[in-house]
Length: 378
View (cartoon, rainbow, N blue to C red):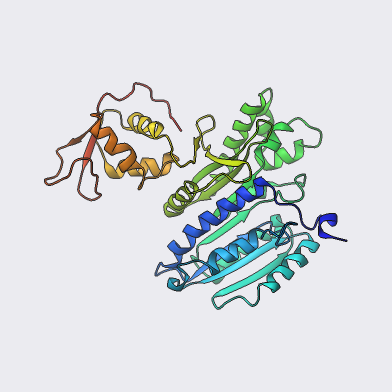
């Protein structure tokens, strides 16, 4: 029976292509940063729902994309690390398909190991992480968790949002859950993923408000194991499309910075665009010519008329906004604000050029006429 008939493989849709673009953009930044650190000797990359390796149109699935991100990286000659890939898949037909695809790639190059693990994510994921920690102490771990491939109705568990120490990119079909919130058979799944309070908090809400609530509750669950969480909304082109989400969780500020940088490089794909929706209702689109007014307003709210340092502005931008603390903050926000008379340097160091904010020089700043509102803008 053909793959397209027995559901071993499935057609790659715009949403899947969008998820894969986020995955590859992030790994393109994550791998070289960690691969060139003196203390890092091993990287571990896990796909929790690996799938068959390819789609019906021949497009590579996430395991092949993860391997390619490491093996074909343009800076690989500078890496002095080994990469260990673990691909978890419970459907035995897809396991065999994935193994055939990996065999077709040939023997992995030196410094790369690959293991396909037949089994259920809920049972296999945590043991894989813990075994990796024992074998390669303090190794950076990245996990891609996308349970919605060919079977969007499969039962999920709370394990989806309970992550051991690692960086993770997790897909959650928020739009699907919000639209079918009161449908027969959904109560158990919703309770397992979001907790029993989801019914009390979601009762009577309109679909958009319910979607925002589920985003908030997902973040709450992920923050049990990840210090920083960003919600990446997959925005469909048409009004009838469902808004689904990728959630990135990390305990490493460098990982957070690299994910945000990767997001600003994304292009719409397959009728799907991207928006940071960590605070629902106040999302920021990732686009070529973004609007920086919200970041300026947020900085004014955060610091008011008090004196602050460039480092404090960078930390706020990195941890509390969708914007970039390096390439966007200074040239796109601080410098224009100073030129416009909205920002003044306090006792600037000798020799400082106007509208420049070099770290380590002790530059202190203050906004003029900050807005009265204390409401968060993100």
